[in-house]
Figure 1 (cartoon, rainbow, N blue to C red):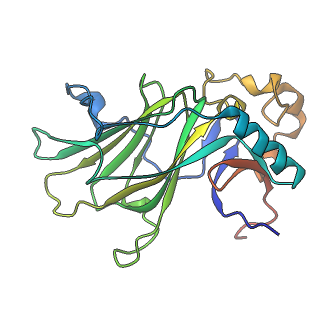
Figure 2: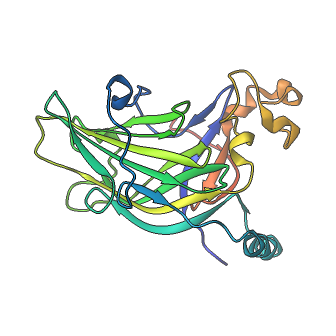
Length: 248
């Protein structure tokens, strides 16, 4: 049997939510007058265009083998704080690192990291190029290991074909931390619409594609839905998971 690693979980409630700890604040750069990220190979990364004929052929083979539905194609990359992005010195003594990633034609983008560890006071964000959607701040509370055994991480889907990574280091820290992107996932299925990422609050575009618990047809199951999750597998596939017990 082919094994697939579980990466992270999205919980579908009245509003699509992510199973990740974050502060919910705006990126630091939103409140600053900063120049745009430089147009350079180091600060702006563009993924190749997908060979959709090859992708569809692989999807048919996966379906025949009973694998969960794939919504995105993962590019292997090596983007970290040293070899990618650009640093900006801020007036408060802190530093800001930004990196733009684009996937031409993508419906969504999500990222996997082989190393992720933030020092106390640091803040990490990921947001769309139009600044309409953002995730973060991720902080030291998101660290999954100590400094001797730095592990990976994953951040969820953002709609569109261009995102910005932003990392703020306060001036009172001597530790840089680790943010190393190992995979960029080009979403080619309408997965972002299904989870309501690109819709106004209170609406759900996915109901015209896939009837789920947040659609009008699911009105009689609002209590049961608390035990149902949309599970992202390996960063590129999705299926349904059910809670069968809790800590009580």
